[in-house]
Image (cartoon, rainbow over all chains, first blue to last red; front, top):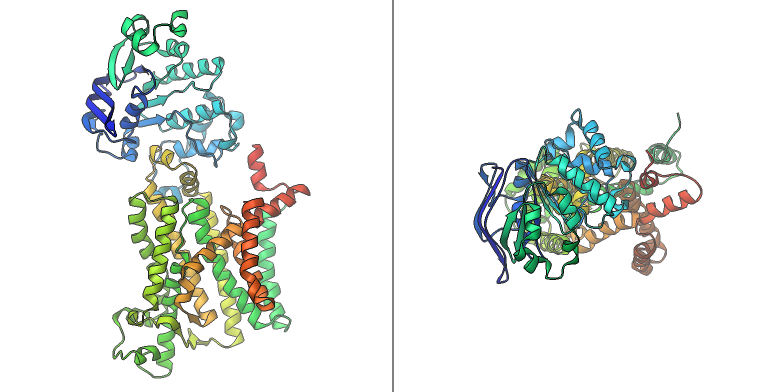
Length: 251
Length: 361
């Protein structure tokens, strides 16, 4: 088991944002989380990567509890996060963005004095090829299009070589074609990493949900199951998608 | 081999200040006073490099650089004063006698030797910055709160140094220096020597800063400026990086102060008040933030104009500085250097930053 979460709860100003009884993820599993706005999906990822501290509950990642660790310690243990709003380093070039992300010793003295380890350059070039940023490698990251920034952030997270990738709305703001390419990338990544994806776009979910889909509603887990089952479940249709949901009926 | 414009500027700079000015001085064309004046500007430029590192590159507005400058200055000043006292065969500096002190305070003891004073001049500001920085950055204080806290620190230290009880000369500070390493300070040769040493140290400081900002460490600093949370999730300990930048900036301030004191002959708390720190930030803002050359040019140019203005129309200086600042903020936010680059690109010289933006290598 890569990740196991029990009795996780957090509330903001008296409002219960998340109250998760149990959640678990196998190694090399790709899990999609869906749910209406305010269901606690992003909050869940915030807690997993150390951005938000939970009120109660336990998180065991790779056999070790992570609840009381800082975000840096969690990142070092191998959890990488892609945010909903692309978060890259706009003032640096795409290459430098990837260089900073790449897994290596990251203390002050190493950064100041040692040369770049062998193989990093190739690693970055391969990654750039995979996310289609080869021609933009020496461009400033702030000058990229929204879709390119999304890909750059995915590249940043992958280059950290984490065991678990937390990907928040990767297809937002992408064209259908770009989204499809992103889906393929995520599927490929799930061969080596555990991946949790939050997504709203049902076409995209259909493409990547090869195993389980979890549905969060009002901070609670409503159900878990294969995409087909979730899609046809009356409770999901009722509370998440509404009674007249065009998007779901089309599929 | 074709010379890049950036390299050419470096060479012209060194050539002018290391050869033309000293030779002009020997030929009697340049007065010793202006040599000494430029030496002091170089000190300011070194301190400005520190500000550029912490503010321009890391995005942390530190408003106590002048305090670190003075810590270095007081270390050197204490050494020079003890030497002068020994030369006059007295036991205690004059201001201590006035204050009814009978024995040299413990904290003055290490400053008898030149080398210990040098080391302490770097170490004391760095250590103070380390302690202050640790608590500030640990509590994740950022932005305007950082500016306010460091400003309050500068003010409180200013008030502390003003007190006679602190035994650092109060309002009058430390003065009455005679020699440095046996050379008499008032002699033109010594002044020229100090000028050259300061110029050399400016070049060394610039070189070190250049190495720092072009290393991976420097890239992390810029990443902290742009998107601090992302740096943390990329597994960098932001606290360590900020602290390192703050300590290096403080040490540069200390170095600048140490070089400043023998050339000026006095160090007073007036050098470390809030205004002094704000002025240092202004040099960097006017010269070009996030660009090492900008910091140096800003410090030199603003002080040059300052000296000129205060002798021609003393009341006008603050108005001119204020106007320059408003113009910079409104029209050329990358400072003088950004302006030069803009003009340069109009007449066809391609600069580094443009090549960067268009993506060609």
